[in-house]
Image 1 (cartoon, rainbow, N blue to C red):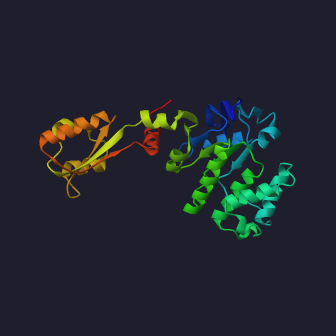
Image 2: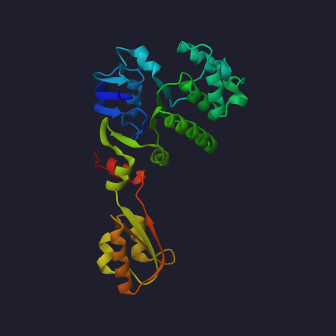
Image 3: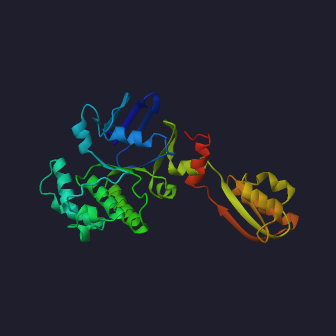
Length: 314
């Protein structure tokens, strides 16, 4: 099967600054794929090359087999991009904006799909409202609708929920999840890592123009960072034999050493569930009294921080 997006050794420089340094990725059809990284990592440049807005200096990008440079028209027909910036024409209503967008793709009699998109994004009550009269959240919904108006098999969402309310997030993810289940490929960039963890099947992390991590979400969560066992002791202190497990966190380490917060709190590193029983046995042997205990799984934020601080998970 032809890949949804095939990126091969892409490089891009601006006045001597190398924004992309030989990026290669294969995103399969039907995937929900996360593209993550700090500001300045190269995400926006990569999305712009995928969308055909800029040309790579080296390498190639194909959307469903169509080169974004040499076969731009067909590549663009396969792609819908929701930009991060709020860009709109203030002279049209919502419905007129979507009809105009349909015309860009040569689509006639597209009103049924336009109505469905508006209904799923809660835009129907605003269908005949001028764009300049909409709130920021409503304008962002229109941007999503514009990207979907030609039913693209590949959807790229660039910070789609930045600065929007909870209602829009829920509405958007419900509709996007439905499209993904129906076979659409979704590529998401976001700084809300909990969204990426909940939605994405695979993740690539960019840092200074390089791919520094590429794996399934489950594999990243399993192998990059261990879990933490949070123990609140009502009486007693941590046995000396367990102190090497105390997490390297200044606040928690300070509390552990000084017994602040009405009792000693310790955050212990554990790599697998089997280690927990051994820790509890040592605590029982030392005669301490446990007030509360919680096992916390590593999440995507933990992994992101580890990798951006210099680790790798390729």
